[in-house]
Amino acid sequence: MDKFKSKFLEIREEVKDLLPNNEGVIDAVIAPVFFVVLANFVDLNTAIFSTGGLLIVFLIYRRLRKQDLKFVFYGFVGSAIALLLARLQGSASGFFIPGIIRDATIAIFGLISILIRKPFTIYSSKAFRNWPKGWYFHPKVRPAYTKVAIIWTIYLSLKAGLQIYFFNNPEILVVIKLATSNQSTLILLVISYIVGQRSLQNLNGPSVDEFVNDSPEPWISQQKGF
Image (cartoon, rainbow, N blue to C red):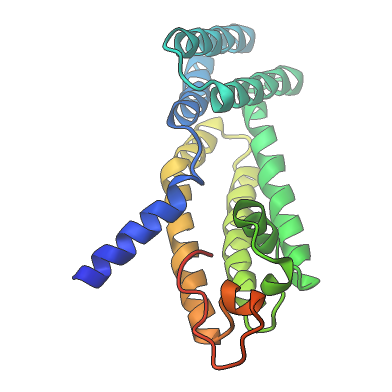
């Protein structure tokens, strides 16, 4: 029980800094739901301007409460671009084009990175932890990052594929948006951490400290972090 509790606390500590600001996530989810629902009752231009007004209200509200506006602002800009694309495309489905492009692009780059044996998860981890680049490419370390890269590439490919398939049905696109929001990202981060950690230990490669100190085998492997 103590081991389980210790592992739970470790995972919570590891993933908490990777999640976006809650206010930004809430605003980003409410906007498409409000827009698509409203578009079923009024014309597209009215739905666009009404949603734009809602986004401005959100921004002013967060500012008055002196909350961190970084992620809120990113969500505001992203939603504003989505509304513009919806206007240019001429339907509510256009709102989801930026997300589809983002997911498909990351999935394609993810596949390429796996094929050339430089999984993108190595670079995302290095940006966050700043561990030695050489350690990530150690033959008994890299396969763990490749495995996690495959998980994310499959997830993003399925997400993008479903959105493309149901592109002409904005109501289903909203459901996909809600189903793959902050909660599913958190679940996938936890799965990635568990799979990655277990893979590192099964590979019996060096820990970061062992790699830096050029310690000989047998290695204890990286026991914390991924």
